[in-house]
Image 1 (cartoon, rainbow, N blue to C red):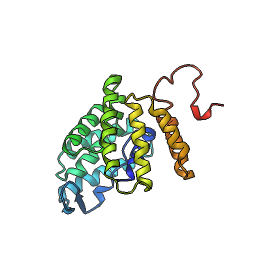
Image 2: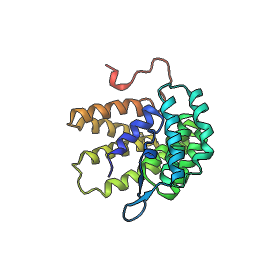
Image 3: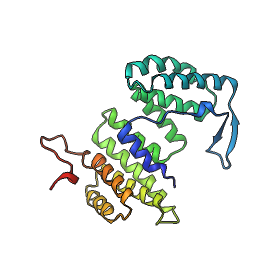
Image 4: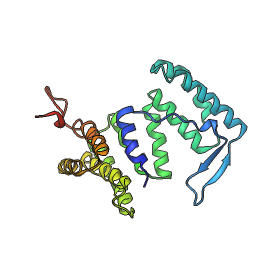
Length: 231
């Protein structure tokens, strides 16, 4: 299992965008979908395009101005689509889509990636994009159910249930099950947090609980207060 799973949820829920790629400054890239990692040299053309993309991102990333993002990054899309290194191409395109509010394009790229190589991270990201695209509650719940199944598989395959990584994935599984419509998992999440001994981890889980669970359903009513702040 990968501890980046918990970071994925933080990234999706708090930032709403993917981390900017530094891949274009690297001379090699690992192909992760093969039995053994293979280093692939980036072509001169790929390096040129990706370096141009990196410069553009670095120039606008601190502005937090969507108009500037669009002005600087959208014109790069046709060139980025010509990058032959699949991993770097898709990462750069996803960053551009998310930074410029191209939610439909981000969703479609993630769908393609899910078909090629399903993962809990991509499944959870799909659910986030469905929410941003204002899809039906039923469709979003079905998405969370599917991502929960992938997380359950990761838990079943873990050999060490005392590993902090296992606990992170278990928290995400409980969260996704609740979002899938299984309301009894709210109590299970609360019990999970209460039973967590590590203070730092407990604080992270509690913060995510307030962000992901307490604000997920029925919290638009006047006077809503997160459960952790109630007396």
